[in-house]
Length: 338
Image 1 (cartoon, one colour):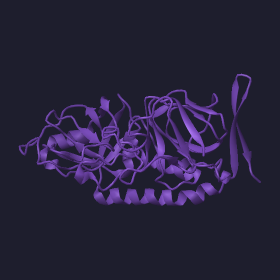
Image 2 (cartoon, rainbow, N blue to C red; image 1 turned 30 degrees about the horizontal axis):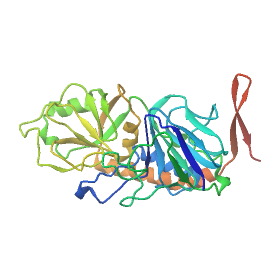
Image 3 (tube, rainbow, N blue to C red; image 1 turned 90 degrees about the vertical axis):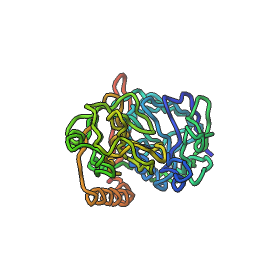
Image 4 (tube, rainbow, N blue to C red; image 1 turned 90 degrees about the horizontal axis):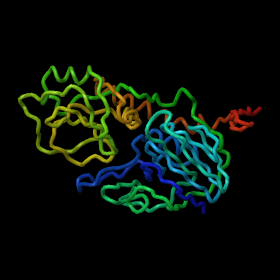
């Protein structure tokens, strides 16, 4: 069975799948990939079920050595992936030979990348998920981020026909360092003055250094609470909830969010836009745009249709791409199939 070894772990590299559901009532958060679209596509590219575990890489990529042949795909933010010193394409399935080293040269754009392995990552499920929750110390590899010297098993490369498959460019996510995130207002938007609602939707918000898998704290002109106050009876927190504490600075709550909270939630980022904030880093900016619940549901259905169609679309491979080095130059060679 193929073995992958961690030579350098990067800033934060964890094993994540789509999450751990059904346990928030017991205080267990969902965890899971911050950019679930990138994880699902990475798995589709190598022929895995969409929810199989991948490596989630944050800002600074790891260095991995493959002790056996593997088939992988790298999606999400572009952190400069290289195999044996040669840059390799993203959003494409790759055959990697035994003894090869995967490293990352540095951020080009985005914040989080995902590596899938054909056949998946072999770690135990905890409460139905392989996702790592570093605070609760469960899931993944010993409930922690990967570290130097770690080894784990992945699946055998049994189906080489997937190698070279890639996502049509028009289906790639529109990542940006200044996205507009669509939100459904509420459920406690009545805890804010009308002028603060307008301010929330009109100004640029800046991502602060307090941005991690739990949530992103934003900087901007503070919002003012109405006479209903800055506290509520604690209730459940959904993915993408925008919670506003007493200081008036919003916090977008994400995959490692707490199960309940006592601050009013002015809005909720729609599901399909959560991957956009997952790719932001400190000092990036964002805006919010109000949409209806009906539009949010329609966008989610459209995304699911795209993901359902991808296996057929990428199965129609018409060319293969390779990177070669000639002297000091690196060239991309594309071979079309007749």
